[in-house]
Image (cartoon, rainbow, N blue to C red; front, side, top):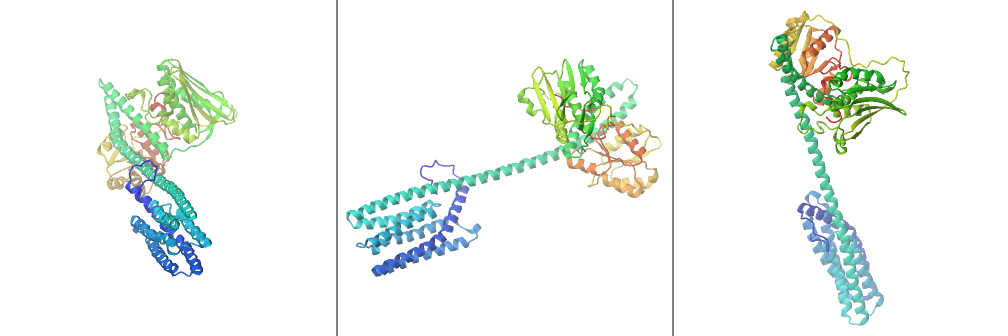
Length: 624
């Protein structure tokens, strides 16, 4: 397809050109059906008037010639349009159409030569009017396809102009010149229309191709995101398993080495294990928030109680760093989830302390109309303006390109952002380099009397006393190291432990122990597509009672977290410290039923299902 005159050459794209040609052929042959009917009626009236006026046989000869060309063109159009789109040959159809159009145009252009009304001005005017009108009408229907314009307009008007010139008098020569001028104007207009239509088609298809490519890119990104989620979930599970065993073995070793010269080695090893556990717990918190399993329970909360607990948990850190830590809650109450609010503020304060070298941190509450602005001020080094939009991203840490582990993992503010989204709490950040930073949480104000007793935050609970020595526990895990380490750690507390690697072995042991089985500790994901939920269900059915169950898992994928939450079982996420495992087991046995709570890495968490602030790197001003 030839480029339009004056248009800059576009990059060659055969596929795009074929799509444009197909559209042009469909439009050209589609409009030709109606045009053919109109041309037939016009031709019938045209030669009928001339034959009635002149009685020349040449009129009938011309009429027969014209109607044959019209019939051939009409039949060809009909066949093409009846052919399914997928089977059409637009390029071949366009070539055929131009040939048929040329014969039809030559027939119209030959009319003045067959029966030119030399001495009849009305008939000559009628002939010129019909031929000029046919040319103008053809421009609109033929504009989609450039070659068709030349194949029709030029033969018709050139034939008329030549017949007028053949008369060789001034009037006819003038009319011939006017006809040629009319030919030029019509071609110019038709070519302009063709260029606009072609450019519109090209732009349309280019946009469609771009939209398809963008959609494919979106699908690729979504697939990559799913693959990344699956990869991290699998990697997290595979890493948590040995880390869980390492922590339990380390606890057993530390207990055996207590009071010996090698005790410091065991203590240092446990410090390393605790650091790894804190990192994994941060990622687990994000998985829980993304999975939507954290319940939000807004209620009136006294900031004095929240601030007091933060002072108790973070005061030692501030004192050890020689920093001042001030809390000024006033008598203000807010409407929020107490546990989630405490976690947000704890992350902010913890990292503010970590990245403040001198001065201190102040946490204040100010009334702002129907809201309370809870603000965390520090005198640290501040944040550059260009860094502020990124500080809530996962693993992003300002000024820690070397990934110094002592500066945290980079998940604290990511957790703050997610909790703020759950609570629908706007978070504002203002910072000046070398002067400090302030984070502001805008919370709805709750109008309560200052003397009203503060609601329980639900962040702590008493540990139920229980007798350990007489309890028999069944541990089900498909990994031998996990079974061995768990049994070794629990036996330090006087528990009698049996181990099983799957459902069948667990059923055999449970059937043998009967009422002697006091509790079940099972991994979530087992071999052969078995899972801990199924194990708990079948053992309870076998024993005919609700055996206390702890579901221990290293899966952090959002769908796995939701599935564990919906099971109604008590859930602990690997790595679990032996003390937390024993405490949770004791509470289950003492309660005599399944509490349905989700527990992470400490006895302090209950309402939010998140790890305690002290065990997490936090989310300070410069460490995310």
